[in-house]
Image (spheres, rainbow, N blue to C red):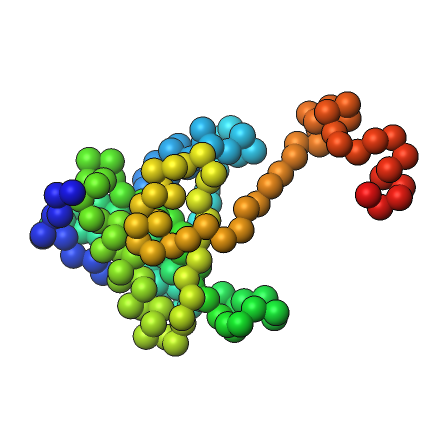
Length: 175
């Protein structure tokens, strides 16, 4: 891995808004092959202005000179009441411009978000990654993340009842 030395990671400002919108659309384009449930028209994952302005979120950007080359956010969320921590940082909008991938940009952003989280008394970080995005999974595992929960889905509109494991009459029995 070649590490870029002149990269600065800082909190995003409203001046970064247009570049972040481009990053969001590039991220959505990259994720479309992994998610057949995404609408085909123009969509937005994030309220970028809210991410920039929120006191409970750190939207970090990586810059090389004046050029933004990556981003990611940490948002403080409340944990479920049965967990052993009250709050955690949820990471999202993790994006690096393709020509800068594999050069430590995402790692530097995550380290910045980790420091921000720790400074607020947060001891747990979580994120989601598509099951088919093996490259991202490996990058996050390299950064210390481990697989924890698997989210599963079924498209009931296109799911054949004959392919279901539910036999006729079992649904009424709570099986």
